[in-house]
Length: 541
Image (cartoon, rainbow, N blue to C red; front, side, top):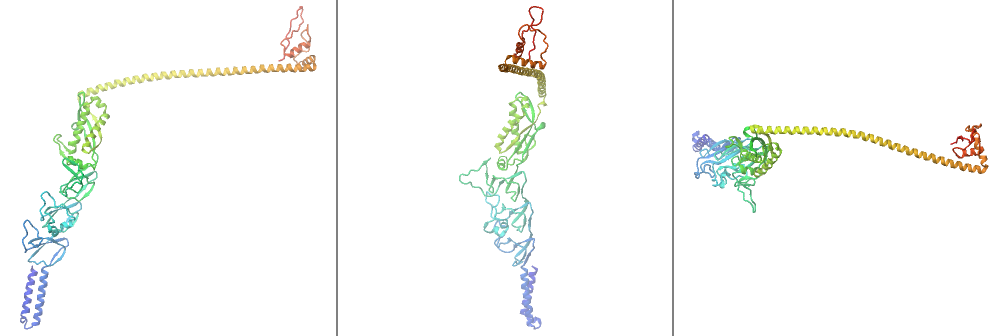
């Protein structure tokens, strides 16, 4: 403004010098030159007075002092009206802004840090439709932040904008927009994010398409208004934290433990015994089924104070898991005696797991199983007495089994000794049998040998007889006898001096009998009696 006043003064001086050159003592040419230069300086000063400069890290907001009034319910001008203008001046020099018409305000740029989004609230624009709470999304945040484009042709709507600013630096008009940095959506490992969109387009089902509806809420494709049927996996997302309700659901395995006096599951058996049971339940939900669970329970992992338990529990545990576990174990216990329940832990776990899995299917949940810890039947005096009776029975049964085992051991020992004796007898019998067989074989061998010798003797006798017959046929019987006699004498088997007297027969006959194999030849011996006594004659074999 000062520069503009100086320009006016210079302009007046220049006009004076041009109009009255006599002021310079008649030097008309010099006066005209100085007047012209003064007017030129005034013009330059006038031009410089309309120039404004915006710093590099700021934006320029211009307010018009003169012009038509703004329409009702408008706070920012977009068509030359009085008041703050929608456009924002960038860094550098800008000309044509007369200081008596415009005022300039420099505003720092907005920086959105990493891990945050900029939530934008528009102060001016078209009113939102009655059913909408957020303005429709823009194609880009740059187009939305252009104030003139935002207000032209009714494109922009006042109120919260669905489009957010991603991390970075933005030049904006604070008279038109309010920007608030808020944390972006971060989905960690082991969980998914189920989105319930409160803004956006409404999904129109195609021909024949039926959307799943849970508790009156339909699961819609991602990007539309409603509960998205596909949960967001782990990662970072630049989403409006107020336009999208985020429900994080744990996808890792959940283990619910019920033990100690306060939480142990109390059951009553068929025979009237009441006792607590330590139970652990393993439950998991898949990423695909997480939206279904959210539609049923809103926020299953949200911890709230349970009215019945007077403890802080997650909604899933207080509304689903704990009631199911109690009902299942009580139903199982009512069908069994106390000792049967204690002795059938594996069967009880299997039955409870099967029932639990069937019930959890209604909530799209899975279970690895139900596991039983301690069964505290001995907490009551009746239970202690029952267990003592069971113990005594088991001791008696064990003693009977021990006695039976000893009896079986003694029987086995006796059987072993008997078997040893029988084996020894079998060895003796086998040895005797073998000896008999050996003796029989030896007898058979001797019999065969005797038969062979007899056959040999017979064959030899026959051969000798044949030889004798042949020899006798050649030299006569007397010659043969004499020949054999000579052989016997030569071998020393016959004495030359006779010991007996031959009363009848001849010597040749005796020798012939000896040769032919006669046992005894009747030869008379010398005796005093008239009847001679025969003497044996050696027979050659």
